[in-house]
Image 1: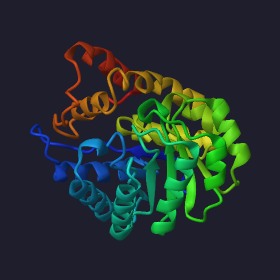
Image 2: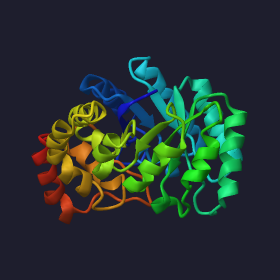
Image 3: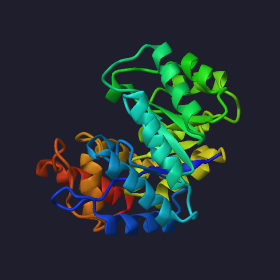
Image 4: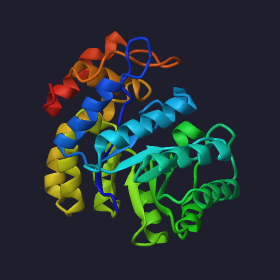
Length: 291
């Protein structure tokens, strides 16, 4: 089981919006050096919504090659079309990813039965460990714990990223899923508490900016060191909040660029971070000790 701080890595881009492969390679090496426990490539934070299918597959392959077994790679392969999700998941499997992360189908608002059948179809089509991803604030559909429990008995459905920020939901999921089924927080602000309640890690936006601190906080929480985890998390609280001053990944790409790690590149319809908010996020970065 992959545990700890799993960075939902940004996809570096040039100012014209093209993928910056050289910066991507450097960023992967930096995360390995900083102690990040796994890389989640081409998820929401990686701008999966605006990469075409070939770019998506190429980005996954790039991360797998550069990681070179030094760190697990989880590929974002979800889609609101079951056939497209299967295609992307197969692509990730062929590239050598360790697992895939599949978001609930967005926009078309399937029923709970539709969600069950969608994920079951992907799992049956591609033999790679698969992690479900529930983020109703973006998808307009909420996969309930009972549906997760139905899917958790499938051999290659191995975990869930739960991004509601609802700690009662974490408790319920831990109750209804097997002990070897991984539960990851998808909400940095509540991740520490989620891990103390039995979650296995955090798929993190904050880890793009403060990977070492996020690794240390997650390690402490997983060890049951509530005080130690709380002390580290207090320094990161501003980042957990202010990295969402505008829609993710707008603020985090600005922050990573501010650190000199990537260029100022993002794809429409996302726009570069508003200048009026720079000082506020920069102060959160200062409190976290990253600038």
